[in-house]
Image 1 (tube, rainbow, N blue to C red):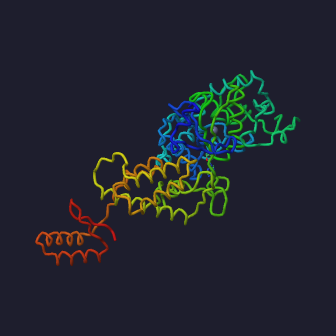
Image 2 (image 1 turned 30 degrees about the horizontal axis):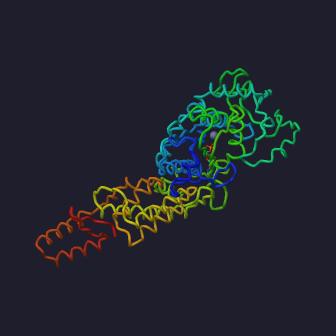
Length: 481
Ligand code: AMP
Ligand code: ZN
């Protein structure tokens, strides 16, 4: 987009993001406004993702929805890490999938299949839109080997007894994303850390150890083994989105290692800028301020919520209530409150739907309706300020100046970003005793006979049994009191 076009853009259509690269809120300028290219670091499929992990994917989904809401077409790619992610980020320890396979007495392939399916199922329950390309590391071994060869030709690699490593001292911009003081870490001197030349060097290819059982290993020009964790994201993102693309998302823990290494690999190989906008979401923490993580043993997954009768979308609602760059505090009480508020929203929506009936939605013409639409748009376009957007929504619902019709269509409009599936909500089916049903029938008969006194008395009896009657054009309807 040219500067001229950008200046001509409607102020409210200008989407702004906090770019981790430079730590500034910037107006989003796409490389090609016809299609935004976006990459999301996906899960390591060695166990079921916890709700903290899922926050990172809800966040990525909202980035995409906001772009689409702003009128852009988006191509989103997400990886599935099914090999090479070791138990320690320092290229040591066991492969997470192999470890899980050992514990569950199966193969790493089976583990990958099981938890990929589980992840997609959880993502769907949270109404995270399916990505356009979902790619597995194990399906892209030739691409990863090719990338190492390129880096080797350019002199970025060296081989140890353990694998092929990236020499970070050869990449001057190493650490820019994380604002790491690399000179302090490397200081030009060669530190020997487990065969590495520099502390920040990382594995591109790891050799299978003799006597080690590995379900996943491949031949390579350097020896039999498997790719380092960071490599897949560089190889696959560039394959599907090009050498330079618009947006890359992930959790904040990826800034200092995983994403820093992705930049070093990709820019080292191509000599071009890898990604224009880096967006990172903060952690979900337990009430005691501890990060939710498997190693701390405090994980809650979507299944845990469902067992408690909590709608997964209530968790999505909770995520919307906190800005993505802030920690999201989680606990029983917090979840219960979010669930109650979400239920209130669903009830409100149904009430409006019934009131409005089946009508064409059309353009928003009322001035007050436009005012709320604009406030919502500027909130979400302002670095995804979803808490503010929710506040706008509740203010709109409580505003007596605005018609039910406008309220209804604004809710549907807002839901393109919120993704709470309001349009799919069905009225709760209630169990009614035969006795109450008969009272209702008697009241109908009394009304037919224009015996209003009797009809009112019966209404009172039904009320005392816990139900309210709503008379609609289709006949009477019962609601729980
Ligand atoms: P992993 O499957 O371990 O590669 O992590 C998947 C995603 O979850 C990454 O983007 C992490 O940054 C993110 N993540 C891990 N723990 C948390 C947490 N407690 N809260 C929010 N995001 C998290
Ligand atoms: Zn990644």
